[in-house]
Image (cartoon, rainbow, N blue to C red; front, side, top):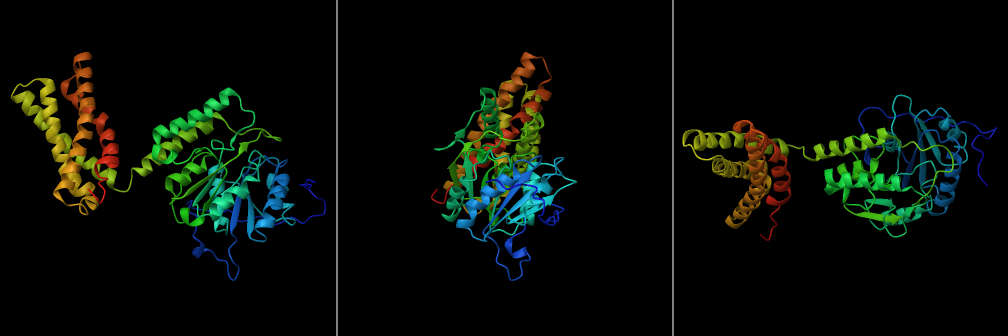
Length: 405
């Protein structure tokens, strides 16, 4: 029997205050719980125009969770001021179920709604489930099992055994997989960790994201958790994505643009922390070394374009390695000071940069010989084009010498 979302004689529960300021989830130690123990699970239900679904979902969730987490969980509905007054529908059944309701008026967006809910939650484990009944509530049992086994993050996936989609069109399948492919290109070390990075149904241990500065865009909150959280053990459970029974889909073209923006912001953030800046400064010094030697060989000695470009680039590579090994990656280099380790780092650095040099020379010749451009402008453009190449592959290869090396 489905609960009437608007029972006539029920008291209306007060709304939760909406957290303000930065998107940081507090640790358990920072919560004011008094003598009360923290619940094991806090499940966030972000809503917008879900008045026809919210009561059914809450009833199903409590029927599942009451036997396995009696009085040890909380459900938090975070509504973005829905015109259909979803928050009011949830308030009116809060007396019957362990439900709290937060109504946001000045903010919008699924990802930020989830984080605001987590900020107001008290659980040791934080989670999210859609309100439209497309995420089967019974999958929560499997997700909780993964957390109890020790997972930091448990994800409901459409792309593992037992997973799938109910009745998607070919176009929708292509868009979904295409978005995942873009994620693998832009943010491979994050997106490749899970089979379904687009999932919006998961549980995460509070300590994996506590006190971190989160900066979500759009509606793919899982990528934010993977990209910024301290997540080591990941468990995945298959589920079949259901078709919406009530209401309309909220996915729009803007969501795809937000997804791309989110990927780029995470990509940039993972290149922060001083290392990229130091690498850039060293690379900038290498530009002057490269251009000075290039001018001396071509402009003074009259050497050919290609030979001058190759030799000047190699001198710059040696300059850059010495500075990067001492400064940019000095924390790693100081732990591995044997000659064999230094030589191995230098050879890796040289190979990566020489591969970039092939790209460098190709661009120079294309711009100078193919399009008749200025040789020095062509050289500068080529240097800019291979900078990201050099940083990325050197970060992943050259300064990853193991203790056995």
